[in-house]
Image (cartoon, rainbow, N blue to C red):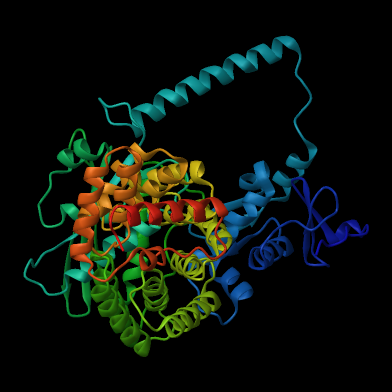
Length: 558
């Protein structure tokens, strides 16, 4: 329901913030038309706290305490809220709401007044020409400096980063999952950055694990300008990490740092590594990237270890066995720490994806458990990456395609370097009949992480979209990837067969169907159709799915 415009209020109760008015008495931000701005409740509360102390720096800890109270959240929730405020404020957002490094945030009334006043009056012609010449010269100098500073010396390409899997100082150590998780956490954190850097997906980088790859060779293979390497040693409760950021062209080390922390302080150190990357590459992030420095107690650290192991199993390969093994580890982690975001997300995802992939017969039980875990995630931190991913996956399992797309778009906004963001955009658009728009989303996921366990799924989704559009030759090439690389993805051989048949290659299509029958005895065309939910789907998608099933039936599938 749309709220009514606010009546005029006393000026001292209101602050001009760009084109908006922050009404401290009513606890609301109003736009130029007097209507409440579209700002989430937590972000609005952050802005109100800053407004009450306008012109002063408000510490991050104080903001977390006043806005979230006793709810345990990471500093990431505050960063999200600040980003939301700036997006709503528009062009004035960065100037009005300022980040004060190592201290907190400040709402600048001076900048707000300047933004509200608009541009200055035009200068006299001679002055204007002189200012224009000076601005052009300054811009040219700045451009030369940026190119010299930010790009490889002999390769003119955008800044791009590959984070090699961190290696253990003890190759025989049994806790390789721990080292993998540190790298994954770092990738997720860097995936949040919206500008200035392209990042290769964590799944693709796993192919380099244990190979002692030369950063320069990695740079050539992946087309990146910088490579981060790291080594980890775990001795009881102490964790030692040594990282180096390497120029992939020259091989020179741009930044390096050792970390020596107790296990409970590890999350903050991962954030410090991300901050070091940003500083070394002169990335203007605008917000802090370090996580909350709160220390994990012994039970929480043990739970985090179990959850890390669960994610290591979960991400290695798609399949019912790996899902069940990971789910068990996540539940064990929750028994030790009911507030573990990593474990809660794992429980929600394994249960919802078991339903989506038809790996479980207890549909209702799995959905109920997934929702329970998601509800707890939402209460702890509704904007965390793991919360958003879990929410999108549950929407998919519930055949709520519009809801999945909405969460997918939120993921793309907040995590533009994470392939999962584009996975959900592509998957939902397919079911909504938006085939032309879905394909670029799939391709973006593949571009970010071209060599991981989910890549066949993205190729398969793109193939489904091409089939729906009637581009059968393109559908063949796309569908061939999942059909030949992962036998757990049961439907895609049928997509391949149907696309071959419609492309005039019926003999090849029959061979694919015959091989499918050999591998999947008892799976007929009717059961194959149920591998895709058509509930709430667009009629164009339903028609395309019927076309696939009818075609493979003609080719010999009962």
